[in-house]
Structure formats: structure tokens, C-alpha cells
Amino acid sequence: MEAISLKAIFGILSSLFIFAGGIPYINDIIKKRIKPHILSWLGWGFLTGIGGFAMLAEGSTWAVALLFANTVMCTAIAVSGAITKEGVWSTGIKDYIFFGAGLFGILLWQVLNIPVLALVCAISADLAFGIPTIIKTFKDSSTETPIPWILGWIGEVFGLLALSKLAFHEVAYPLYLFFFDTVIILIILKIIKKEGIRKYN
Image (cartoon, rainbow, N blue to C red; front, side):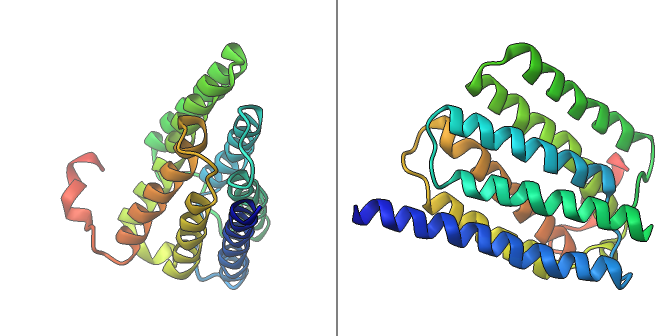
């Protein structure tokens, strides 16, 4: 019981940190301090929901709280960016290519309808939706702010601690989110610099 209670605490903390990061992020959008990539956030909201249900289908417990918290906050961020017109829909044709790749990932999930493979497709599609945000942030790091991403990153650490077992279906999505947010934070803080991937822009 003690171990289960500890996992529950970590799961709750992961969700709280996600919300703690999302709320100031939305506030920065409203105050016109940042410009989120709307397509990325819409894709993330939908796909983290898919990943959460896939994890539940495979028997995951408290770790899934991280994904469902992401679903709520990502959708709210996308809507805020669209309503305020501060959100970015595209920085170039590559955004639509990656968005299309994300949609293809959704299609594979629908066709396969197998929890573990659905999780793989969800992660691949999530990354495809996220690449436009990486490109946007490389082009202008001032369009993002680090604190919400750092709080989300801390939430993902707690999400990993909430894992009940080191099985692929439970580890894969939280670990992917941890690494993705790490990259975003490093870009915003200019530890990873634009010049390093200039040839891809």
C-alpha cells in the first residue's frame, strides 16, 4: 500500500506541475508575450489523449495522469492562441509537411487499433506535430518563455517516478515527453543554438 500511495503522489504532482506551467503560459499568450504554434498544440492535445487511453488499455495507472493533464492544457493553449490571434499557424511549408505526418500517425493508430502499436504511432505523430514548434523557436526564441516548459519538465520527472513498472507501454510516452521538453528548454535558453541546424531551415 505504501508503494501504491507513493506512486499516486507522484502522479498527482506530475499533473499539478503541468497545470502550473500551462496557466502562466496561457497568461503570457493573453498578454501578447509569446506566440505558440497552434498546430503543434492542437496535435499534442489530441495525441496525448490517445497515448493516455493506450496506456490505460495496457494497464497503466498513475503515470497516465501526466498525459491527460497535458491533453487539457495543450487544448487550452491552442484555443487561447487562436482566440487572441497571437498563435502562429505556420512558419513555412515544412510545418504543413510535419502536420501531415502527424495526421498519418493518427491514421495508423485508427487502422492498427492495437494498444502498443497505437502508442508508437502516437509518439511518432506527437513528434511530427512538435517539430514546427522547434523550428519556430529556433527562428525566434523570444516567441517562447522557459518557465512553463521547465515546470512541465518537472511534472514529467514526477510522471516517470509514478511509473508502476518499467514496461515499454508505460515508460515510452512519459520518457519521450521528458526528452522533447528538454530540447525545447535548451533552445529557449540558447544552449542549443540556431547556427547548429541552420542548414535545415
